[in-house]
Length: 113
Length: 112
Image (cartoon, rainbow over all chains, first blue to last red; front, side):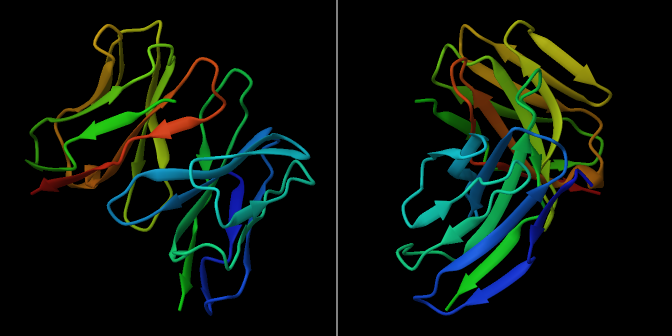
C-alpha cells in the first residue's frame, strides 16, 4: 500500500504535552512532507524535507518541529505551543527525480483535550 | 507564492452523469497539476496528473484539461459510479518550487 507508514493511527493527548508522530518510508524517496487536514479544508503543508539533515517550513509551521536524521524517517512533533493541535496529520513522500507524485501515508488522527 | 482555488466545494450528480471540478492557479510558471482522490477515512491517492506541455490527458473515465492562458485546469469524470464518491483535491507545483499547493477539495456524491 505505498510503502509509507504512520503510527499510531489514533493518538490522544492532554493539553500542554508534546507529542511525536511517526512517519517511515521504504520507497527510497528523497523528499518527505507533513500535512495537516481539518474538516472542510484542504491539505496544509507544515514542514517538508528534500534531503537528510535539511528541512523547510511550510505554510503552518508554528507550533511544530521535525527532524530528518535518516532518509526513511521524518517524525513530526506537535508542541504545546500549537494552539489547535487536534487534526488529521498526513505524511507523504516523493521521489522528486522524474516524478513529482506524492505518496501518502494512512494518517494519524490526533485529539488533544 | 502559488495559490490554488477549487470549485465547487460540493457536487452531487446522478449515477451515470458526468462530473466536472475546476481549479485555478496564480503562478504562471507552474508546470505540474495532479488530482488526488480521498475516500472517507483513507489516504489521498493520485488519480491523474498533467504537465504544462500537454493540454489534455485521459485515463478511462477520467480526464484532465489544462488551459495555461487562463491558468485553470479541470477534472472530468464521465459515467459516474457510486464508488467515485469521495473528496477530490487538485494541486499545482511551481517550476522552481519543491512542494505542491493544494486546493480546498471537492466532495463528490454520486447518487444511485
